Structure formats: C-alpha cells, structure tokens
Amino acid sequence: MSKESDERYTPEYAVLPLLEFLEPFKGKTIWCPFDKSESKFVKVLTKYDYDVVYSHIDNGQDFYTYQPEHFDLIISNPPFTGKKDTFERVLSFDKPFALLMTLDWLRDAAPKRLFREKDWQLLMFEERVQYKNSDKDCIDFSSAYYCYNFLPKQIIMRSLKEDIRQVKLF
Image 1 (cartoon, rainbow, N blue to C red):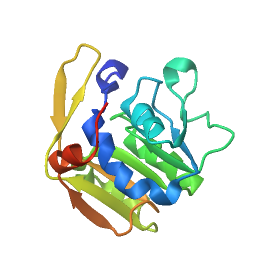
Image 2 (image 1 turned 90 degrees about the vertical axis):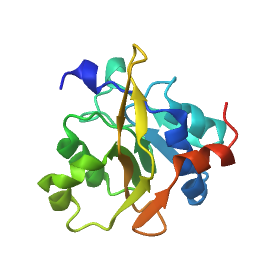
Image 3 (image 1 turned 135 degrees about the horizontal axis):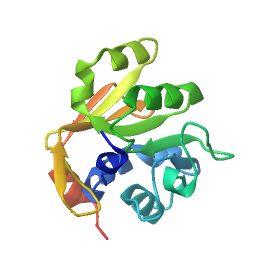
C-alpha cells in the first residue's frame, strides 16, 4: 500500500465511542501521533476539553523517531501499512492507548505475539467504519480500537449508531 492509500480519515462517529471511557484520563495529555489539526480525533477530544497534542509525518514528525515532550496516553488511527512496527513502538511506551485498526489484523500472527504478555483490550463495533480519503471516496472496514490499559474490561461491543444519538455532534 502506498502512503496515499494509507491516508484515510476517521469519521467523527468512530471517535465518539471513546468518550465513554475517557473520564479517568481527564487532566491527562492525549497524543494523537498520526493526526493534523483537522483530524476528527483532535477536534472531538478538544471539544470535550481533553488536553491534546498531535503530530503528523507531513509536519516532519515521523512517529518512529518523534514523540512529544509529555503525553499520558495515545489515541489515533495509524496507517494500515506497518501495523506491527506501529504497535511495537506504542507498546514500548507502556502507556494506555486506543488505536483504531481493522479487525482483519487479528488473523495475523503479529498481534498475537505483540500482545502475548500484555492485557490488551478491544472496543468493537457492530457496524463497519467508513474511512474517507482526500478525494472523499470511502472505504469501509470492520474495525475496532485495539487498547491497552484503557478499557474497564477486555472486550466491549458498541453500536456506532447508538453512540451517534447519545453525543451532540458538531
């Protein structure tokens, strides 16, 4: 996959379910390492008064070599390619995280090896998430947040439709 095909944008309705689990992190700094100011992660989290720092490779902030001075947890939608390397780096921080990723990745050996010694968690959805690219074309995937020290239990299932009705959108 090329960088262009990796650049897919998460819709607001796929960020909103995180709000239910973020209260214990009030006052903490959230790093969105694959995001720009217009990212729905940045906009939604900021709107709900969370302290957010963001970075993006287009701004010279390569996730594999850059990190902000301070952050307490990580939330984002990482590129589809390089998932194993991304999760290795995220796990190396030993901080809570919630990363949106296709559920198909569970068929690979990498997540099983990476999370063997960690109590990883999944926030799964009944519906598929429609990601957009810069041309507004959509591609949908059955997705989940792969989490560590973020959720109150290991697997949680939610409906994206219910979450949209419960939270006031922009």
